[in-house]
Length: 626
Ligand code: C2E
Ligand code: MG
Ligand code: MG
Image 1 (spheres, rainbow, N blue to C red):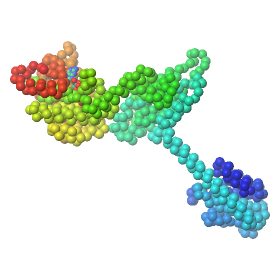
Image 2 (image 1 turned 90 degrees about the horizontal axis):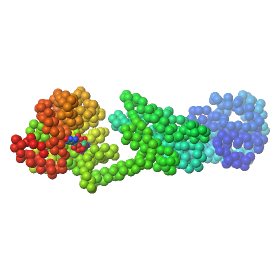
Image 3 (image 1 turned 180 degrees about the vertical axis):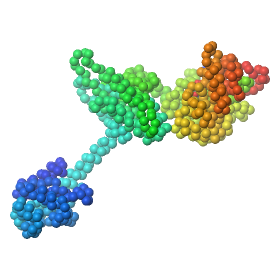
Image 4 (image 1 turned 45 degrees about the vertical axis):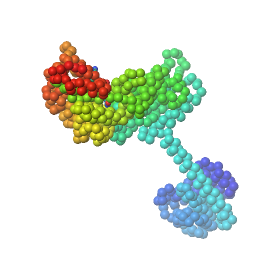
């Protein structure tokens, strides 16, 4: 029996299998009438439970169970035996427990003697193995010793199986964590790479085609920045559910990180007639459009309704790469192209995209280098008083001179600067350089103010007025600096904007609203902002001398708005004398302007020469432009 049981201990793969086979073997090999194994409950107050049994007298088990369901001498014995880890032998049930209903039932089932062996395990609940014989005095000293060895081996078996299963469970948990995105519960990038690896390594049968959809959300970042990560997380969770609901069960949906999701779809290639043949690329585009529509539906989180847009890039497997990472990268490039063309659409990867991406990549590298090597330069455009044409200020405008002599304007590189997060260091450099230049001009007797543009990404999420003042103060008092913020940037987050502008004002900065008229600001909003001037966008100035245009009426309205808000105006893009004259006629109070009519933006030394030359002019000559 002992050796048969040992082999069961070694071979069993589960706890239940082990105890069941063991009971069976004990009765089969040794002719015992009944053997059962029971354990204490997992919780201290839960009842002892008989878990496995075998033998011709097994009908006794229900009687025993009933007896154990409430406090009884038998339950006490079991608990004592386990607690003290002591074997308990009853060599004559009839004699030891006379008149007890349980012993009567035992005798009815031909159970004359019993041995109760504690199973004191180190892992999980302890229990006992109880064996019955139909002969009294069956369990002599030698029998007891052998059965105790058997019980000890069983304990060993239980412990090792349980430890093994804990380890397996842990391994499963680790696997889950490693391959799942914690926020959405979707598979993660690592899972995707394995999945694609499997697809690519399966020999081509020609029966299935696959495509990857790379999905990026437009408009998620502002939600996250403005409303906090909790709201952002909830938005992502809901979008993940929508995404899952948009695809078939057999498609794989993955969150790669941030607001990027991927879907891998398969399409069976049918061998039937040609018209039945649906190309995977059509399936992919159709699904992409469905996803875009579904993700674009309004979403209410954190008390606000959000409108998001999605762009989707598509790659085909294996046409667009034989390596998982490359396939994902190419899908990303295609997504970027979809975004570049306005977003809210899908785009299929092609070699051309890869090439243009390469160019952009090199521009990015060059930009970073330009920043490190301080290759940027500031040009200055004079701002003049419309009435006297006296230069009153300069607007600092960034330029990027190239090796071939070409000087790049901000429109060609600033969008990428913003996208790759270089705006803060570059913006700081601009502000400090402009302040240093102004100091030099003040020292030469040129009493000018300096206008500097601030981008929206310098204001959000954590624009710091003290920091900006710190950059300027070593050179000039901040009151000489006019910070220009575009109208749209001001509308981003009302409460934050109001506080930040006030903080900038408190530091002494003058504030101007740039490109006014191109955004959606309302008078009521503007009223609450600490602003000093308003720059009329050049599109209105352009309209001024066009026949039949509404330019004049619009500029008049802007002037009225400005005077009701107590702001002074600066007209941008004055290209003709006629425009200057009209603007002057319409303006009330102090009016300034800038534009090619007077001077384009020019390098610092040229500006200096111009400013000095004009300072020497008599008032009669002043109307002559540069
Ligand atoms: P902005 O602040 O509205 O600057 C005025 C733009 O109008 C300048 O373009 C200027 O060269 C151009 N301009 C001036 N007069 C005329 C004119 O008579 N006719 C025409 N057609 N254009 C005129 P620029 O220098 O290319 O700058 C474009 C924009 O880039 C700026 O618009 C500003 O928003 C941004 N920017 C420039 N420098 C910086 C900077 O250092 N930091 C930040 N964040 N943005 C900058
Ligand atoms: Mg400006
Ligand atoms: Mg402007």
